[in-house]
Image 1 (tube, helix red, strand yellow):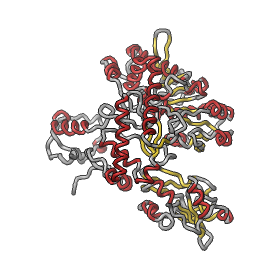
Image 2 (image 1 turned 180 degrees about the horizontal axis):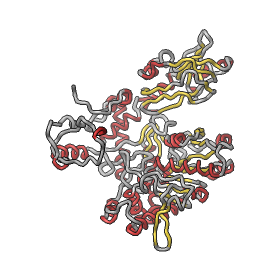
Image 3 (image 1 turned 120 degrees about the horizontal axis):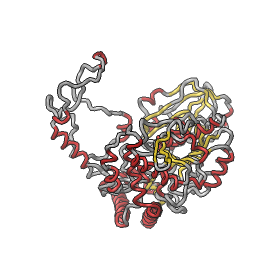
Image 4 (image 1 turned 45 degrees about the vertical axis):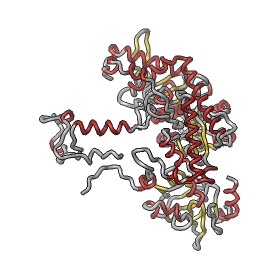
Length: 486
Length: 129
């Protein structure tokens, strides 16, 4: 059943008492001329109507708390309740961001420890927690690379190398910082084409942005050679932490030769995410980038903790937000790391990889084609439905939509772009074997349905609040605002 | 099977080129390219007068699946663009070799055109994919 828009149930004059500011609103000195004259068009509903509307919507969430969510490249793992409980202690919740350091020692100690843990896990020399999300972490990372070259009087280095399998955010970040982007091809086994890289580097090279394991779900085996080539040419190496879950505690980006890394703490360190946030995109740096870290960073002097700012890091790329990042998300990540400890974090990578390889092996056994059959999967892997598309007209979209009827969130589809009709599947370490087996059974059942009559798939989903949406029309004719009928 | 009309020239990044009577070159993307991208929702064409280097990314085609660059197959200057695509990107899906053309250009070197793949060569390339 479709839930009516809240505007559609609006009745003139009805109001939610709890939300009514009442008479005598203080306009805060806004001049009369600048105040709006007409009343904003807001829905007029009772408090109970508002509660029921949003509660019903929340019950339709298709989320990690209700369903298996193997969305590749997104690390949709279980978010332990304990992280939430501890991060919501009243002493944390009640702390004002402008509270003096002397009143924030507990919070600062947690943040300092988190910086130390992340340094240890990634092998980097310094960590700043301030970026608000992965995209801002990337921005900070490339900004530091640029600042480093500028500080050395090497301002001509403005080209960023990006493998063709990279996340789209990588070239976007580079472009946003005024760099040009050069694409490096990948070979048939999913590795960066090292000869093409060798030919591409030069005095214009600012750096390379790499994800390892790559978006193909395989480990970049020649990473030391790549690091050597880029460093020798005078460039730096940027590690996109999207797939950090696969290697957590097993190998460290710092040891691979990376100079800067962003971590999606909301993914790898298991804080709730999806639907846009909130995120936390901490950055780690090698020795040579330490002076450029975004501020503030937490420092320790004896037993006391304090913010390090412009005075301590005069070459910093600056501040990225009003305060110091998403404090609540960082606390959850800290609790997660402390609960698991060194051994636990290691098991994260091991079980994430084991689950992915188990799922890949079961699907291969069932006749599905893996995009890189010769490679061991990392924490995710790719199935291509190229054959099914040709023979049955069963597309990745059809399978994704039909999976919803079977009670599974769809994997990532049509990414990476280089693999036709692909499903990028990331089960994460928190799923049990029975769940993985039932996912395989669902995919086999859907394939069988397609063999009988593919039109069954074309109409999917059947059991969701809405049926198949017209994504083409939605993109061609953007309609984002509610307008009541005239 | 994708259509590959004879009489046009092709490049491996899936653009086609047609030499007009006045020597200008019309450029578009191939039937294979539009089919791989799926339903297009946005097309961005280069500005008239822009000087293009060979292999320069100068146009963007976006479908619900992906956004892809279109590359200048030869060097030259943009003479005209297909303004219709802004409102009707679907034309590129329905008629990639006709109404769905992207831009016309004046080649820097007329001989560049002749060196490109012909229909048979492009068909062989498609078979190898």
